[in-house]
Image 1: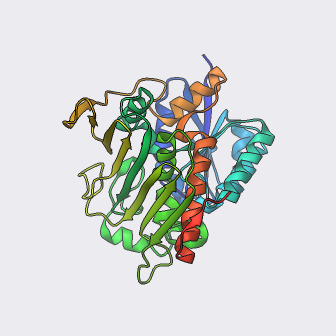
Image 2 (image 1 turned 90 degrees about the vertical axis):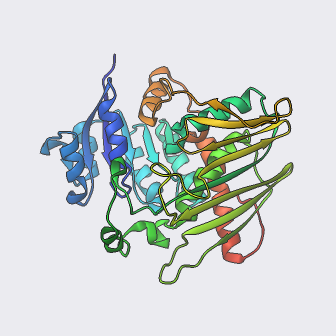
Length: 358
């Protein structure tokens, strides 16, 4: 079996630590190098994965040229995804970018073009795509259990992006307040804010549930927190030819859903012509109603099996088999999610309903 060499470049997003762990734990892969312009941001990964100093770089070009990876993991700030994808594309290596797709639709299209010119695959990782309940929901939709999907409702959030690091390790309130002024998550120019950073979960996975159908127009409202230049709460309404759907994001919930489920619950409700499904994040089951059985009943979400247990495993599988990426991690579905987010941002700015952009 081929031994997949994986490099991690740019540590703006703390999810880099999670992705590197998946790579290190894959039986047919190894982390061969990491790169970031700020050495201190790589210290934890260097320790965690037993990397040598010869595998740690501050120049991405040296990292790529010396380690010659088979795959690159990219975790820049959202508005820099395009620049970094173009840089890596020059080395003709498959790229996985951590969510969101980009800081704008224009940037997302530039990423698609860069990787197409390189002749390599581009994957957008949405961590919730590997939640068993999300997968079971799509399976039930595809089986026709609830008929044609007519609407979906998404609520996504947590205490905020600075409350936890790699492996969901919690930080103190003092650490959060100290990091906030410097963090890209709170800078408009870097693609920060709950709408730009987090709403893509709902718009992308919701588009997957909808079979790739696109809304006609989007109406969005965001909060305007005192002292911040970005939002921490957004609500959008999507008008489709067949009905309405809703996507809401919230930084500032009382708890994080992976420890203690929030109120409102984080997750999805999908309504079809013949039934409904609710899939709350991290629950081991989904709850279903159908015309034949209107009583709410649980269906075990089961455990995910290879090759869809995590993004690194799935990307390696597709590369090995020469398969196209499918679902929310594909550029086709992720681009629809980005279209909706861009349209929502314009709607919030102009305080009106806006026809779908792009």
